[in-house]
Length: 146
Image (cartoon, rainbow, N blue to C red; front, side, top):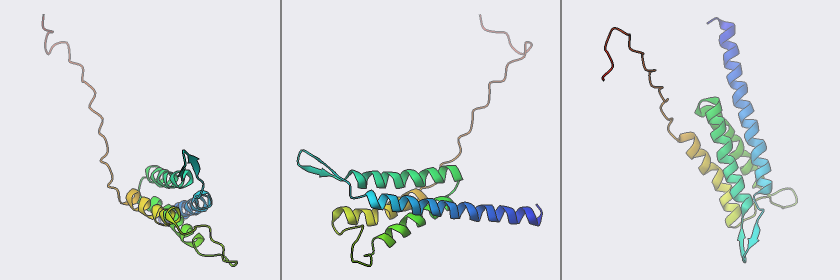
């Protein structure tokens, strides 16, 4: 491989990692805004925004890992999600917060990092091997049983 092709390969990988990180930042910001959504069923508050956000983080990271073929892109997206969740957990200039204290806020602050560790650290599955196609027997080898 010549130097130009090697540099192109390095830059395409760096660009892919940056894109994965940016996608993680965007998803993390959107999910942080919606994580407090809940629905009342029979007097019980179900935090569907938290559940959807955590499932979305898992789907995003797993999808990136499967499509990109490795842990690095999934790790870059995870860093993006975790960084924006950490940033948005800080109080704003007026003292308002997007991630309020409480069970749902704590679960959202910690949950994406736990999901990221599971997805990125999960061992790679071995490649499935296709069975060899049956080789047709030649006409002179054996005769079929009666």
